[in-house]
Length: 149
Image 1 (tube, rainbow, N blue to C red):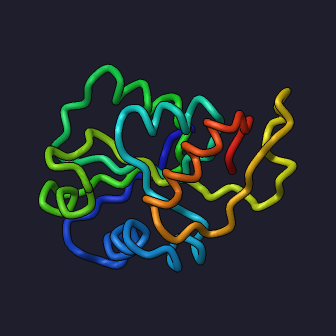
Image 2 (cartoon, helix red, strand yellow):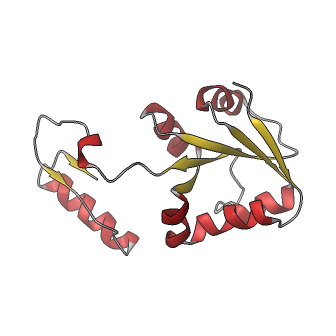
């Protein structure tokens, strides 16, 4: 599949949507999309079969072997080639990410969670504070919970 290439050279509507998805839970929920960056996060998304809607790539990028592998494995329908100054505004990392991925939010059906031999799973509904979420995950690990969703 050849992806549709969308060039973003200004803070146009596409750019504004990508920016909003990075900061607004309401926009993420409304559009069913969220932005992921970083090698580990993108690798995990691909490994677990998350749907990659689009890849965000700096227009002047010289991609590594990993970057080219992501382009191939992700099977994204769209590639946003973003001007360097705009890309820097979208990334949360000091030095930027080589590639960012726009992923589809999975459905809320608990059936999508894999069956775990431990049998105990904790489901969270719209956790409000990342610090609290971290505490919940650590507590689940301490009590032998098999999964958190």
